[in-house]
Length: 175
Image 1 (cartoon, helix red, strand yellow):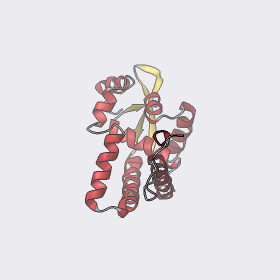
Image 2 (cartoon, one colour):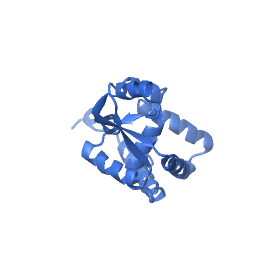
Image 3 (tube, helix red, strand yellow):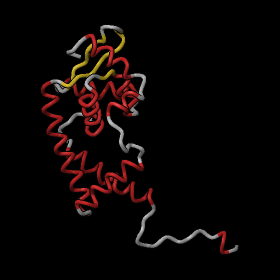
Image 4 (cartoon, rainbow, N blue to C red):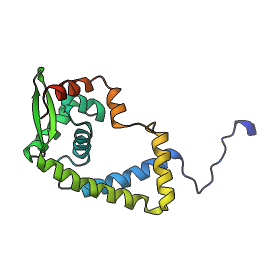
């Protein structure tokens, strides 16, 4: 075999990207799940509640598509959140088959507390880096993930399912 066909050897101090990301993600998920221990559905439920808060009004279908959850799994998550009075489901007046998810006052309060807990986890995870390095890491990670400069509104505009919420918001302010 010629030298040109050989794969270059990585420095032993540098892990490959996949390994490093997987290691970081496992530690992040472990700590986040511990921080969200009192939330039915844990990290997935936190994602749902965060999306609902950020988007103002969400149909179950739009949530499932945006988060990449199976509709049945989402239904079980929503059942648990509704049982704890953290969300409520409202029927779309324009399409009785569609339901929108809204945070209750208890849900808003709970989400604020869980958000602080997740922020603390993020701070703990990034504590190995200096403040400037952590900010750079976040910026580079967002750029590598294709999220650089993306706002919640621009992401919603890219998704056709968001039209349901815009229609309901225009007709029903309590959505």
